[in-house]
Length: 220
Image 1 (cartoon, rainbow, N blue to C red):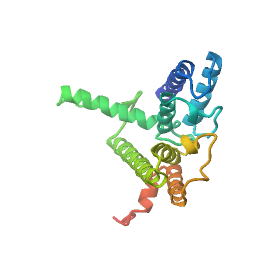
Image 2 (spheres, helix red, strand yellow):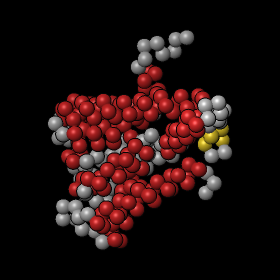
Image 3 (tube, rainbow, N blue to C red):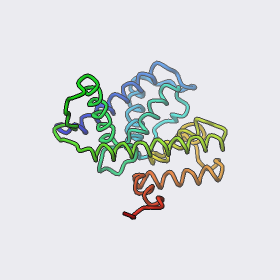
């Protein structure tokens, strides 16, 4: 695999699945005991499902231990690869952020150095960095605002945060009441409206939505 994005994506799938499988084998979750074969199968399937935002689940991970759930929540923010129909931040943007952090670390040691930002063998312009920074800022802001509002409406932070994160990333299931074996039917009407707006914005990749809502959009 020569493409750095594909290598990193495969590494994320394997790493998240391996760590999750270990937690499932070593931590018993509410009468759900997994042998190593079942633990690997459920870990790989559910990590892949969340990363690709397909919405499927092979087990009720809302009943797993918090450490195992945390891995799945982290996967919600990763999402798929650029050009795919998956939601989330996307691996390529996370790689750009990593390249920016690495460049700034080098600059802190060598302030006069001229460093070209690269992703694999390709150089990236400053415009790419600004675009990625803007997208991630909007993404985190939308998830945070939705999580706070829904948590207040539902009086449940786990439901509020995971419902908000899955809506922006178009994931499907969250945790608690909105877990894979649960339903969004019991949420407050205003919570559902917030989730609808978040899903719409997330599916359109955020920036076009915020441009649409900007008063001076299209003015020079």
